[in-house]
Image 1 (tube, rainbow, N blue to C red):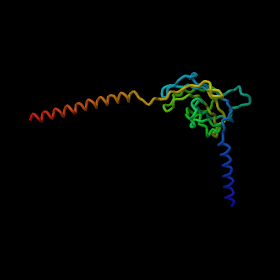
Image 2: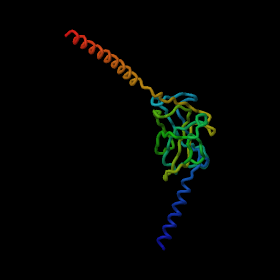
Image 3: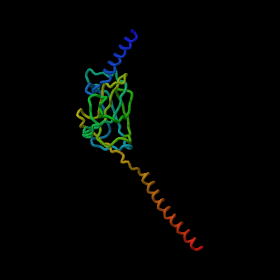
Image 4: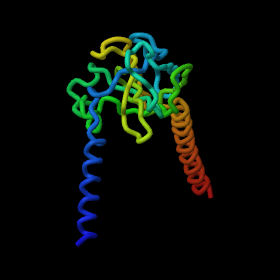
Length: 204
């Protein structure tokens, strides 16, 4: 009975811990990072080709805010509202476990308050859309505790575009053309040989 009671208490504490840490809302996070990215407003970056340079630092002007518990920073590429319209799979939710705004991971770095720079090549699978960049700060237990982003609270400033790969490849196109030409030449050659064999047979 004692063991059963201990297991029940342990399970309850585990559930309480999971609940308290599992429900993290975006509105509860402190915007304590200053994040900047190289694309200018309206600039188009090509997936698989162009680089985006990010810089970030702790906003020391915030009164009563400390970064002593910050351990890691995770950067994500996030959809702007214009690219979320009529797309439920990109919907913004305050509950971070349900939020679909930032679906493209960029990089995870150890936290440092100053002199942070990182260059990222836009991944080939990033779809055409309008974006901004957001950085989530995590504590030692890997829970979100703060953030920073390249746009304002309404997500209307410093937005940029990504142009997805069209799906066509120049090398593949050239190879396809060469193969088609070879097939046509081979076909004519086959008919020529067959015709020549037929004439030789008739001559005999």
